[in-house]
Amino acid sequence: METPYGVLDVEEDAGDEAIKKAYLRKVREFPPERNAEVFQRIRKAYELIETDKKRREYRLFHREKPDVSALLRRILRPGRPERPDADTLIRTLTEGLAEHLSETHADS
Image 1 (cartoon, helix red, strand yellow):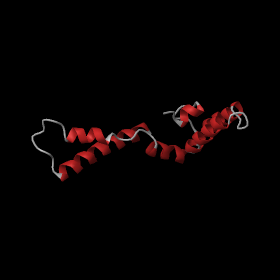
Image 2 (cartoon, helix red, strand yellow):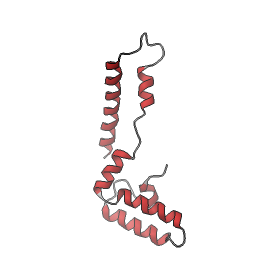
Image 3 (cartoon, one colour):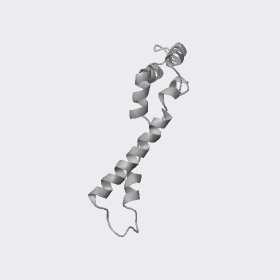
Image 4 (cartoon, rainbow, N blue to C red):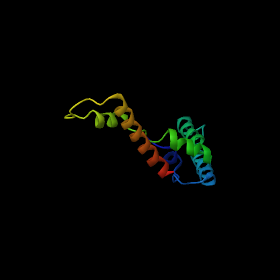
């Protein structure tokens, strides 16, 4: 899946000004009257990351999601002598999600 950064051809640590310049450059390259589909993709990418606040939201909600099925496989792995109780299940899922969120925030 292509990210808004890839669509606009900017680095993930680009600021407002660099993103705006990249957006305007892409709009000149692909005006809506020539290619409406590409223009819509460019416009949507810009709307997702145009401000610092929107970039933070993008990082939190649109980036790679935690692999919950992998967490469940870790909990319910074959060879485990017994099924975990609800408290163990919740604790393990919570720890896995917390680990994912700390990795995501470390990238921010």
